[in-house]
Length: 217
Length: 237
Image (cartoon, each protein chain N blue to C red):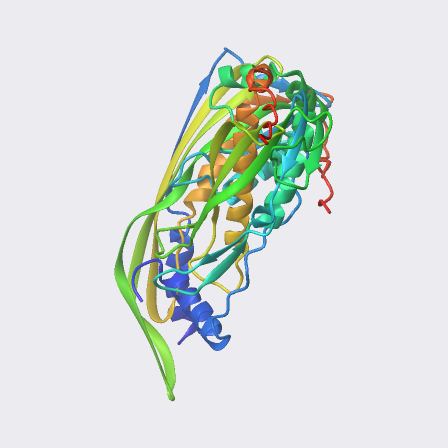
């Protein structure tokens, strides 16, 4: 034991001993599915929202070179976040259950948004000088015509961090970091949709429904 | 150990606990401070936009408590951030009073701020860090007993910058900066006796005292305002 950080080192040794006795098990990180009501100016667009099963049930399996494996449940909380945020952002939000393709998905829907989780990374403190648990979630938000043609796509690199000890029996700090990353994604979306007129112009400028292919005898 | 010997060890310890050097500076935007009228409140917010550091929640809480003790109504930080979601997240939070004015141009956002009753935003940027350390303490346990021997020390520095904005006038009220440093010691002769230099606490008191000079409670402000929880959306199905 050395220097003034000795007290903390002593406490961490105790925690380490307890976690060794407990078998070093890690419980999955499951961020809460409750977010504050966003303050947004509604855009007068009837928007569809398509979230496929891969997005809704996304689980990140973290396998660091050193340390315990850690599962992070990203899908359920992301589903609630995008659903509630976009419902507050557009005058009408309609869930779309099937992937937009050649056929009109629902009457009145002007465009469809599809969020995709592209990558998740987590990091926990490894030294006493490093106080933060961190989480990165890379979303891709696709804007599609009701017939499945991509109008635009935005990369949402969301980041969250939360103070927490180097080791411990719970993963509350890492859970808070993942939750903060999701809130950051909401902040990113708020900036993307801040100019509602630009979004409406893009939707209006998108190519119309392709003409059905004529069958040749 | 005799009573006199114990007193000889404990007395210097008590004297050394408060060994902190603190420097506080205040800058006013106008000649005088602002008055917090009845129904208005102050919110203390920590800056979180830097990747490598973040103002400690404990420091914000300390400043909020100290302002409350000065009879200033304080709105809870988390409740305010949630009420303004997502416009006070690290990515979207205004970094200047001009940016705040732009944000408040949005009628929905201005309306939500008015609903909270918050008039003054106190932004705190900084942290407490260990800048140096040395010495060593060794401990041993045997069937006959145990004990520690040695001497350790560490130096901490608390540096914070505070900006106070008036939401109603969309203008800065003033700035406060504090730099508190101190060295803690841990002599160990059988029992380690930590003598802690509480730099964060000294910085907190210095900041709160200066904010208390810039923002004064009006004659009709008597008790801290209640901070209702923000409206939450039920989890989706």
